[in-house]
Length: 385
Image (cartoon, rainbow, N blue to C red):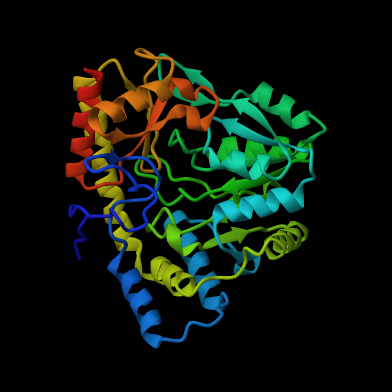
């Protein structure tokens, strides 16, 4: 079956956070997709609604087995269902973990630039953010880890937790297995718990697949909480469903207490059937989606190379987000983004949202029908011209 990713959806006046914009504006910002989810998932929702009884739900063995089977088939990664706990989202799980697994006044380490909501989870919990700035090569446009600085920050006695983004948002970088082992071993050495946000793990568009942290050697996963979800993969963010995978039984018990205490462990009506349908029937849809997204990314890369050579694309291989170096024309991406919006109606994320060296970058979401991607690029070129 061939799935449709070309039809433009009208998401205005639908309570969409992203599409709460002025008429004529094109928002390529918030990380959800402008595609309908897989019809198999819609059918599962329809079946549930047809039942008509909307009482309390609970995650079943079928749910956890579906998660395990998916990661085995899609990523060749083994996860014991007994390691798993249902949670109502990756970010709520991070926030609960910060609150329960660290102490007020502790440092939480972030590798920046990084997904900005991590800061909310940390700062709103009375903890401090400590930053490890990824090293950026302005010639090759590649990021690498500053390992000396990373260990120095981990060795700080107040640093008790690290939030890892695997694959990395906003750069789209896919950490290698060796890098993950090195990061986690350093964390173990200094008594740091690693919370690994793997919400983009199914969206590696080219090259080497991502490595789930729960699949690392046994001695490398004892201090790790892995968080996965269908929300990015299948455009199901509004369902608030995620899975925590914690191999270490002691840490798993602590994580369970965290999500229970902060009430992020109870599924909504559609979460369980939708996730099961996604993981058991959604593979073909996802594979076609990734091919479509890769074509969109290639279009943007070629457009920028030919028509906006003053910009440089950071060569990420995962997510439907593209990180673009604008340092040749500005050192203030927030002002640039505001100018672009005012002059063309194209709404993008300034890299300043993501801290670190973000003032030199913009982030664009390209999970749209190709016609809208082309529209966005034309608007971008018009503003910069």
